Length: 335
Image 1 (cartoon, rainbow, N blue to C red):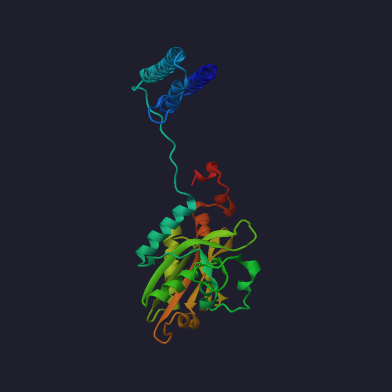
Image 2: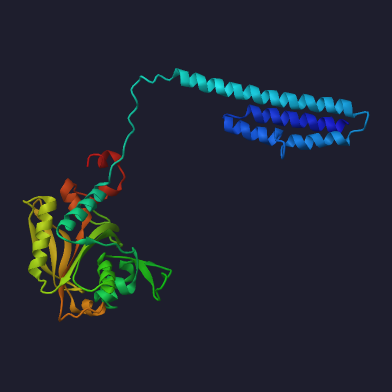
């Protein structure tokens, strides 16, 4: 009988300690089910011990069992009453006539705001927004863009190559170094005419300074149709820059070279007493058209890629691109 009574004492001590440790009605209900539950509660196991007592011991064992059950149940009711009283006291002390506390609301990041405005402006010019993957294969990132194997842009040190192969890809894959990959994917899927823009992140292992980052955002634009000329490209970019930065912004075009456009130009905007490059552009190279099955004798087109952060810097008069990614709320909240 001593073993049975000891089991009753241990049950009682454990149950009362668990009840006293609860801080919410939900926790208290879990303790009730654990110790007093009719189906799986520990009380059921305790009750089975009565049957192991001898006939002479059963009255004392039964009496002790009832005492333990009553004491645990009483402590449960007392704890629940105490919790309910404290909750009622807190609710009674709340003055509903006091002014509320206005929560602090976040806002869009300056670069995100710029992207939203770019989408809206290009929509007004009749361009559709398309998306593409940030993890690319070499065909879309280089080969279809007329970038040969020996071109410096394909140097592993100038790209973020990934050690695994993407689904459906036979070769290595990398984080895209330009949003031009989206124009290839678009032309593979639909015939001309095409008028699209793609906005998103690109990755290059550049040295980080005031105007460069290893991750930044680009807007790629592509227009393919009959009789598209360089005049259309220059007009579009000039109107776009004026629409975003104001009518007084000064834009210039410098002859340049890109494997996927011919002729090609660099696009600069006036920044104080100097010029800052904001993107590259040109007429789509005939080899790019052939790579996607277009007939270069039937269609022409232009493509451009603009650095979104640099437009954002000019718009908000920020002289260091790193400020956008330092996560300083004191700075970002001003924009």
